[in-house]
Image (cartoon, rainbow, N blue to C red):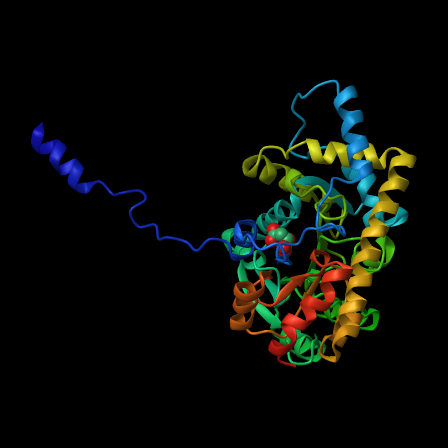
Length: 404
Ligand code: LMR
């Protein structure tokens, strides 16, 4: 008996013994570093949240109103299904796709926990679809993209996107690298307000890319996380709409975190366009089965609030006006930066909250230590973290370090 117990113990494999320590997320780590800095002149240009002139990330007026209404009228907290709030998806679709495309029977969508949930669900779906699922991502991209796809078992390949030296997109290099992609490979594209560079393809480049994707039978997965914060709600969705109209199959991972200011509520959606009516039914079945095992059903509150906003013309108009003010504030700061130093001029042609500055990692760390300026190690800044008064001191601090 004792001998038996000893041999069982000897055979026992320690479940967690082989796990290695993991580095903390550098971007999210900035939140704490900034909080701990006692200097009153510190600047938070780190994580991508919108900020007003006072440096706050307020709950939007339309969202507050919808939350009050929801608190007073919500009849139950009983479960919804793995598809989440169906009406939320129905009301959001025309904003993303325009009225006609939103009604397309080739398209199906479900609510997800944020844009990250949408990307993960997309990745799981892609992994079910083909034998050697591969996704192509541009360099640089949001640091969480590759981990999301890898954790779902996809092979991740990269193609050039942004040329740091000139501060512009290297479209020729991107198109050349994608010649190596095989039919059925997925190409991840930022629908607007590229994160981290702010550099979006021109409409000519989108059309050339679309023709190449169609020709080589590649499948676009659009990450649309900043609609309304670049050039406006419709303009920011143009590329996404063109891709969906022009391609037989496509995926769109959407986030309401920034444009509805709902960050921690985790509100998003995944839409898929399939090639045939039969395929779209099977796609939806698989999305629901996957969602059930990933998170059973998405958290309700944020999506319910968006539904209340979009279902009421007065609240919806107010939300659009608030979003437009946010967009204009960011665009004004972007223009001020571009004018302040000739080496920042490319920022004027870029869009959204982010810009990638030509700074070494050492310079970023030095700016953090000596000036209390917090930005991602890559040199990405969240422009919304500035205000009219801080543009000049910010540019003065970075000027000696700019590489261009
Ligand atoms: C960002 O890029 O700063 C945001 O999308 C926040 C995040 O989750 O990384």
